[in-house]
Image (cartoon, rainbow over all chains, first blue to last red; front, side):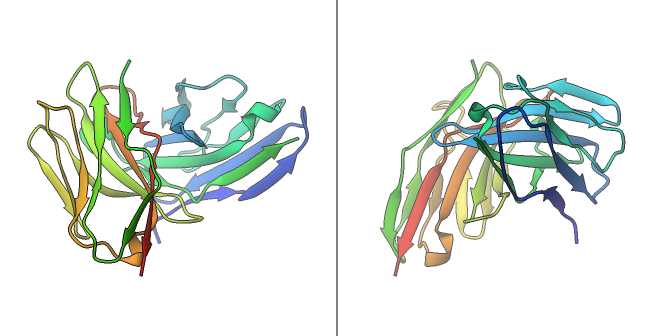
Length: 115
Length: 113
């Protein structure tokens, strides 16, 4: 089954404790992205990747890191989480660019709470 | 900057009612337009899309037409079901190297029997 998986689905942590949210897709997609969803703001892009070792900032990259060492995986790293990073996070992948009409496939989401 | 504005929810309807969720956009060029749906506890799924002016996207009884003159992409369905209860997001994306969707705030739809 074609899918994007994320782990963990739920996480409660404390300020400053480094964490990683994993994302994996089995569709051999070139493009992957991370978004955060906050009430009243919709989804905002954090980082995106166009291929292995190619990543770039989205609209809200502060406080986050990413890496793309393998095509299928795109982990999101919070090196020193803060309460304003409490949010619902989604990973997405696509074969082509959204601007050309390609469908983005989203993972189930990771709900993060930073105390 | 580029942005998407959706009608505020929640929208509450009875089963078989007609649905309209308004979406307008501000953009410097001619983006592709999308509607994504998020069912409770799940990620977003593409509902429909249109990549150029006057295109109509349709799926599962939903439809939306890309109106360049009014910069709109309103979502409609003639007869909603309880199973349509979800959050609906309008989004746009530009061609070019940036693989980014710009989303509206989302509109929650609740359909009652």
